[in-house]
Image (tube, rainbow, N blue to C red):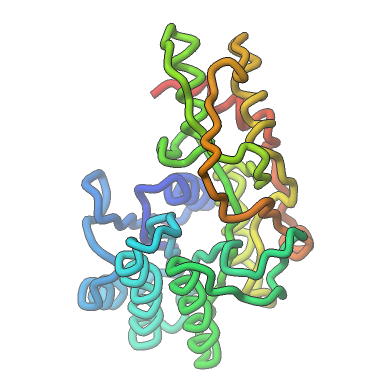
Length: 292
């Protein structure tokens, strides 16, 4: 069996490739960045069409995105997420109708009332990023009506040692490690009372594979359903290193958070047989002890 992963260079692509290989599925990785994979842009129609036409894979996973809600990323997100999804789906319709397609969504694309979010909640175009995700969702539903097997997984926050420091969880981990090594820096953060999930990206990859193995459920929230504050994450990252973070963190009072809490209701994915295996403590220890 064969799979194409668009966005192979990110943490999700890395762990998903491992899961697929463990299930004897050959992986063709695609990324715009240089590396040991196929160089290409999911937003380029001809490239995607020819790749799918030639390979006719059993699975396609669209994980490519710039994970930011910044307004100035609107065209990049539209090209990668929305146009990329259309490119994949149309190529599958024309050349490989038996291919199972997975498109990544986000918990941010729902109305957030501070309660656990499920796949049945109302959508909310609260940013250009969410607009692209919602368009991708409706494309999935349309092509599903044409007979394609198109899955849509709504991701909530998940991390791993492969996260970049532009994500606050990794930013905290790396600052704590530098301080333990002697750095005198002060770490600036926004609202540390914000709560979100700290799911391991490797568990999320297993959830993706669980979802595409079934033929009944096509849209599913993927998350642990457990939220923790940034302050709690600070505790988990600094205490093992014997550093009092309260002395080394400066709070930016002008920072405006996107939400107070973002947490999933993973009842449906649990019914499919998936559970998160790595808890927040184990994740913090994994990221603290990771050596490149």
